Length: 500
Image (cartoon, rainbow, N blue to C red):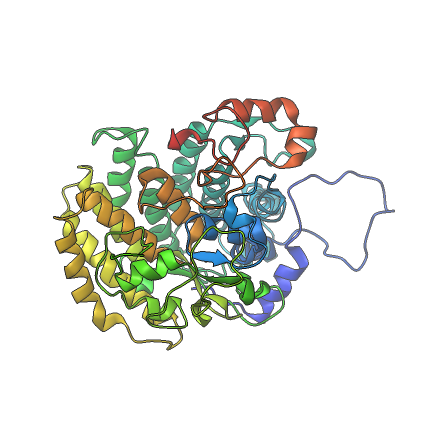
């Protein structure tokens, strides 16, 4: 888990904004005698990981949370009603990906292997962790926009108007980078000191890489559905890899924040009075299926995870998708699990890994028992939440009965096992809304109903609009990116390649 030492904080503050662009030599006029003498790999890596974890605001946090209806806005409701505005991606490219690329380039060149660099971790381990992290970030970027700059994205002045790569080719590169990064890692050698996620534990990074491989290959299931196809082959290879996957609470990757400027839980920066749990979510967790229910799931059993997510164990949330919620019942705010400055947020959990294994088994990709995988996924979700909710509620004891009830539901719902798995992913991914949004777009579960007072064409967004600077400063490549969407228009309801 991510623990931030004072040393790492200092390194992050010094190097978080460094990028991979080459310096232009203007002589000594630009020399800062008080600045860093050379880029620092540990600081760059720490800065990239933390910037990814603390990215807040509309584009970095709230839009996907609202699109999957975890929360409802009660003021300034335009996001939950699908306003169409360009969304910048500079944070990903400049503050995160460039840092990671710099770590890779510093370590690839043996001339840089000074005593200082080597004291920050074996070069292969630094490169491996950076490649895995790069793949994680690029997955989010392409899932969010569609075709994006990849091959030329981090070349700096060498490619001022970088070309767009197809999402298909980006995903294949992501899979290869995850495997390459994983296989470079050597637990017998020094792990990266800038690793503020696993504190240099490269065995944990190997499990993380394999678990992301499961997730990423499943994301391609609409394009490669066959049990002998590319996606299934990648899934099975990652699952059977000797390094293992995330299966226990101790394996999990969580951002564990601290109440320190720039290192707080990203939700802490937002006004809690503007957001409440949606009635859709609370009805689903309360097991409400009767008249007046807005639940998008088939669940009819009380789900005590509501005690962790909300401030009331049973109350209704706010109905989603209206322009005026001033008179709404505002009894259900998110608890400190979500909003506290030092609350943890998940990156990859054992529960999600088991739910992905359940889906792969149900697709016929593996010979595992899909219902057993589903049961493990649900049970671990309860246990993990209890472990990370700072004593808000003890809910793990409720897991077995709830999981058994959901297994019974498989025989009664229209979508059978696929539906229950998709619904349980939605509930379990609260706190990881980008993943939940990607899952919903791919599977169609749960059965979310679009906002009533919509500002687009009346459909739930399936992507972000490209940044303004792309249409103005990189127009030819921007047009190529738009042409790959269905329909080929830069709207938030157009579908990216894997969603078509």
